[in-house]
Length: 441
Ligand SMILES: NC(=O)c1ccc[n+]([C@@H]2O[C@H](COP(=O)([O-])OP(=O)(O)OC[C@H]3O[C@@H](n4cnc5c(N)ncnc54)[C@H](O)[C@@H]3O)[C@@H](O)[C@H]2O)c1
Image (cartoon, rainbow, N blue to C red; front, top):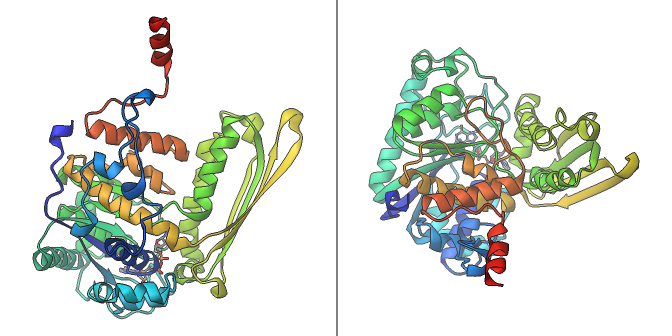
């Protein structure tokens, strides 16, 4: 398949709805890496290696040397926000990175000024920004976004663009008739259907403009049949949803281990406190519901209680998020896990993770942007399930259960990269090594 991957020639535009804590931490980080000030730790696209061939071949190239990814030097950033602050100002407000670091990339950050957002207070009540587009219909708003994309491309001379949603979490909605087909959806845009969220307008505009779209929040957004079908029609890659950071990252690392050893789990209580703007938005019950649904699905899939009723049939799973301003972006999470082992004897695991939300999320945004650009050049359209590795609530083809186990997700991702480049897939069976030994005797 390698012959089909077009080279990463020219500049890559990364367009981001929502220039808040996550987006500004990523942009400032990339600029700092470009200047040699910092290292892109946590970004597999920059620091990760991949094994090729047999264990004995000793081929472990950096992923970025194996697949043709855009070079950081060739990235141009842009985006939209309901607040007018440029990326330097927004990064100062987010208070994730030190002022001394931000000042070293100030010129680059000040140059990224948000375009006016498509916003609706019906979906997010706790924000009061006024930097918002006005138009009679949602259809007109989508066209304004497409115009923004075209203007950005021309102004920055970029050859390719990807879009990654890093805006606030919208209120919980379920798919309805307007989300079922692209015809109904386009009709809904023209009729200002209230079930079409702002994030869906961005996603529609992105797909229409031939730009791969990734959803980093738990909103429904592109996870509806209308936009899935449309992405296939348009030959555009889509992925979502909700960056896998913090507590859920730990969950999908720990749970597969307990499951692998056939240890039982009776209860998993997760609570956390955070005080950034994300926390403020999630303080509204309608918006929290979106996040809760995304976070709860993880353990069900990993433990499969219906297949393993003795071990996980009674599992009680609870997730809480509490808005606590003094902690800012430094989220603290506590997990109490009630497990049981041999003959049913109970044990407990306590996890207290003092994490930094945006520090964990920033490399994910960069990787998703670079891999979505790769997917598009490899002519992979529709859902990019191989990027589930980065997502809390991975989008899958209708009827297909998502995979949450981070180790299975990693194998899937690595094998997809090998497949794209025409390399042998690795099954980890390893029997051939032993056959070689026998043959050599
Ligand atoms: N940080 C993490 O670990 C993490 C993990 C998973 C998901 N997320 C999600 O990523 C998103 C961003 O998180 P954050 O911490 O940067 O939040 P943030 O509040 O700092 O930034 C979000 C930005 O989006 C803007 N915004 C809201 N609606 C918009 C719209 N319609 N168009 C354009 N801009 C809009 C807000 O004004 C704000 O500046 C949230 O949805 C969050 O739930 C974050």
